[in-house]
Length: 114
Image (cartoon, rainbow, N blue to C red):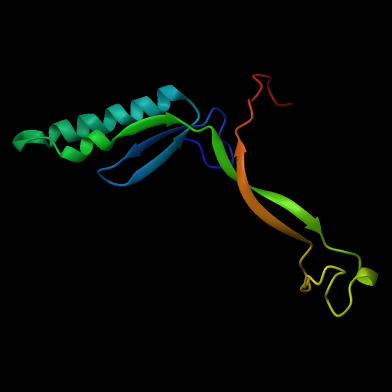
């Protein structure tokens, strides 16, 4: 299973029954998890299927939210009482201001990291 920082191809499985969202590096892993969920629900379906089983989905993540650096902290001489030229306050210890935005997942090379 992948974590949000190491998504390679970016696949997911969402289980509407339990509200569980899982990330995977491969489509095969995501589909395998979906099959496990279906099998578990099949075992519980003595009196009928849980209707939420139709909310089980597998998909490919195409965009992720990432931090983007907007501006680095100005040098000390560029700050007056902690404020820059544009009037933005820079508290001590803050090295940059950032924002978040959606970015496409970049293709990962098959090359081995050295």
